Length: 230
Image 1: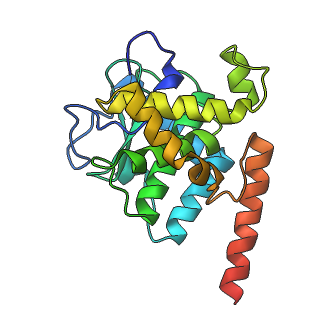
Image 2: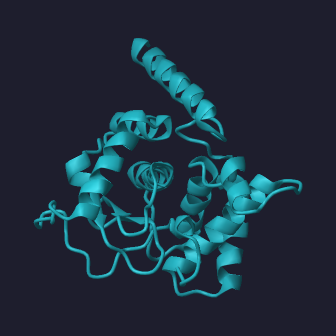
Image 3: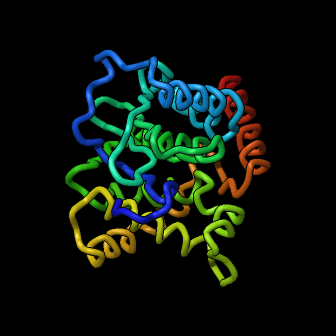
C-alpha cells in the first residue's frame, strides 16, 4: 500500500515484513498493543460479522483462538491488517487502526480470508486469481463498501456503486501485496468477479449494515441448528 492512502484502504493479504511467529514473546506491555487487544476483544464479543465468521470457522474445523490466531503489530505504510497463511495468523496493525469501527472492519475482512483459507485450497502466493477472489469476497462481505463508509470517503451517487467499490478495493489490495501491473490485477479480478461476488458464504447474503449482519448471524445459527437435527 503506497503512502498517502487512508488507513482503512489497506486491507489485504500481506505477509508483514520481518514479523515474528506467534510462538515468540509479544510485547504485551506496549500501550498500543494493549489498546489493540482491548478493541479486538470488543469486536469478537459484539460484532455480528465477526461472531458469524468465528462460528462458521469452528463449524468447518478451523476454530480460531484470540491468543493463537491474532497478533497486534506495527506495520509499514498505511496497511491496516493482513492474513499470514504460513502461520494461520491475522495481523492487526496497531499503529494504523484508530477506532473501534475500523477494528471491526479489519477483523471481519481478515477473517473472510481466514475462512477462505480454511474451506478451500487457496494458492495465495502463486495464483493471483485465487487472491483476487478472496479480496472480492472480503470487500463485498466485510462492510468495507457500506453506504456509510463510502459516504465518509466522498464516494457515492452512481448506479451499481457497491459493485464498483468492491472491484476497486479488491484491485487496490492486490496491488498493495503483489508486484504486478494494474492491467494484470484488473484481468484477474475480471476473470473471477461474477462468481466470487455471488459467493456470500458464510453470510448467505451481502451484509450491507449491522442489521443485515445480525439477521445473517441469526439465519446462520438456525441453519446450523437445523443441520444438526438431521
